[in-house]
Amino acid sequence: MLLAFAEFPLVKNHPVETERVSATVTKSLGLCWCVILSLLMMANANAELEQDYFDVGVQAFSKGDYSAALRHFKKAKQEGMDTAILKYNMAVSYYRLQEYENARRIFLDLTDVSAFEQRAYFNLGLIANKQRDEPAAIRWFQRAHRNVGSKQIQALAKEALSRLGGSSRKTRRVDPGWTGSVSSSLVYDSNVTLVNNDLLGVTNQNDTAMDISASAGNWLKGNVNNGVRMVFGASLEKYGKLSQNDYSRLNARVVRYGLLGDWKMRIGGSWNEVYFSGSEYQRVITASVRSRRALSEKNQLHLRYRLSRIQATDSAFDYLDGWRHQLRAGIQLRNGKGRVRYYYQLELNDRKDFVSKEDNSDVIISFVSYSQMRHTLRATGWWELNSNWQARLDARYRYGLYNDSNILDGGFIERRADSQMRLSAQISRKFSRHWDVNGQYIYTSNDSNVDRRSYDRSVIKLEVLRSF
Image (cartoon, rainbow, N blue to C red; front, side):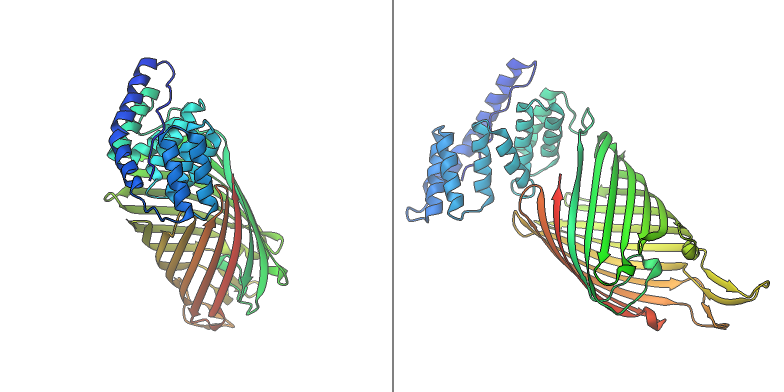
C-alpha cells in the first residue's frame, strides 16, 4: 500500500522557508513510508494478476520510476482492481510526472471517500499551488485543516496556509467562476397530481413525463465561510398525455453565508415564478434564515425559519394569495460513511381563501379554506456504499388541519384534516467528476376527511445529471 505525499511546492517569495517545509514533510512521513512499504513486501507471492501489477507499481514508485509505476497501476485497473488506494497511487504518480490535471481529477473523486478525504484536500492544495492558483490552494488547505482525520496533515495544512498568507478560517479572495448543473429525468407517475400542495388535484390517471432542470451560481463575494452567492434556476415537467398538468418554474436566490459565534449562518431571499399548464400561476417571494452548529465532532443542530409571500399571477387562483411561515428544528448524526437527519417542522398559512357570495349581499354560498397548519416529522439518511455509489432513504409524516370549516351548498362540513405518509429511496452512481445517474422511487399515501383528497401515489424517476 502506497501512501505518499508529494513534495511541498515552492511558495513564492519564501525560497528558504520552502526548503525547510519540504524537508519537514519528507522527514515526518518517512517512518510511515517505510512501514507501508514493508507491509507491501509481505504480499502473497501467489496473488492475483491485478495484485501483482499493483505490487510492481509500488516497487517502481519507491525507486523513483514514476512512469513505470503509473503504467503498472493502470494495468492493475484494467485487470479489475477498483480500490481507493489504487486511485490514490495513480494520482500521486501523475503528480510526480507533473500531469497535474490528471492527478487533480482523481483527487477530486477521492474527496468523496472518507478514508482519503483529508489527503485528497491536501494534495489538491499542492496542485493548485503548482498551477499558480493561490486562492484555490488556500481553500483546499483550509479544508484539509478543518478535517480532523489526521493531526499530522492538519499541521502540514496549517503550515502551508501560513506560508501562503492565508487564514485557517477564511480565504482572502472571491471564488472565481460559475458552477451549476443540468439534469434530464424520465418520470412515471401512477396518479398524476399538481406538484404545488396548495392545489392538490387527484386525477387517478397515470402518465410519464420528461423533467428538465438547470441551475447556475456564482460567488459575488467571498466563499461558503464568509460570502454572498447568487443562483439562477429553471425547470420543466412535461407529461405525455395529461398536458394540463405540465409544470414549470423560474427562480433566483441570493444567500449570505457567515458565522455568528459558533453558528454557521445562511440568510437569503428567493423569487419563484411558477407556471401551470403552460399559463401563469403563482409568484412566491421568500426570505429565510438557516443556521447550524456542532454539538460534537460528528453531530450538528440545524434550525431554519422561512417566510413566503404567495401571489397568484392568474386571477383564477387569487384565493391562494397570502403568507406562509415555516419553522424547522433538526439534528444530524454522522456515523462512519453515513449520516441521518431528523427534524420537526411547523407550517402556518394565512391565505385569502375561496369565498362565493350571493349577488349584492353578504350571504356566503360557499367557502373553502386554504389556510392550514401543518406538523411534519421527517428522517433522511445518506450512505456512501463505495467511492461511486451512494444511497438515500427518506420517511416523512405530515398532519395538516385547516383553519376554518368549509361551506358547501349552504351547509357546513367539518374542518378539512389530512394525514400524509411519504417514503422514498434513491440510489446514485457517479461515473466521473461531472456525471451522475440517479434512480428514485417515491410512495405517497394521503388520507383526508374530504374523500376526494385521499389517494395513493407511486413515482419512479431516472435522472442523468451533468455538473459543471
